[in-house]
Image (tube, rainbow, N blue to C red; front, side, top):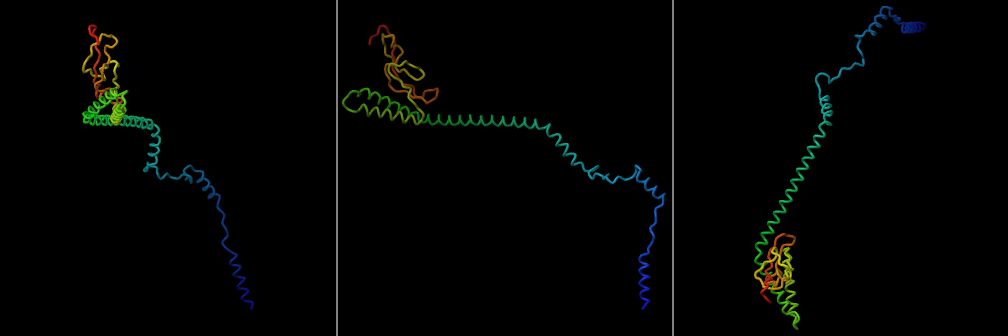
Length: 226
């Protein structure tokens, strides 16, 4: 029974024993210190740049970013010129469209001019009948006046208005056409309208007359008498 205990003690004694630690010599410690102090020793923070030497994409992008502010004024100036040309083009198109519409209106008016002339003649006749029947017992004057007003409204649909030629008004060659003259010894009547044969009409806001008023004008003649 005493033999197993002896074996256990022997094993425990062997486990606790081991190779004794050895101390580094002074020469080895000196060599290690010299290696660390050497300028040729590798710096652990010195890491090679993977983009150095071959990949210059990052540097090119940075160079482009640096040049962008210098090109910006040129780009803005080019945009201003482009906008100016666009505005000029829009204005030219607007004027062209307006001219086309004006020409179309002129064509329509030219085709309807015979109708306008006939309506103008009816208008003048109606006004004459109003003057003839004014003060009579019948209501014809009111009927003719209504008819003349209706003709003016019809012509107004085409932007055509009366030149308002009237007896006693000065003769205006721009809107009146003298088809005859009436001699008079009254100097004050010279060059005035004696009678309106047909009322004249013009385009609203236009500088030309569609139908000049046909009138008879007074002409001064000292030897004449009414």
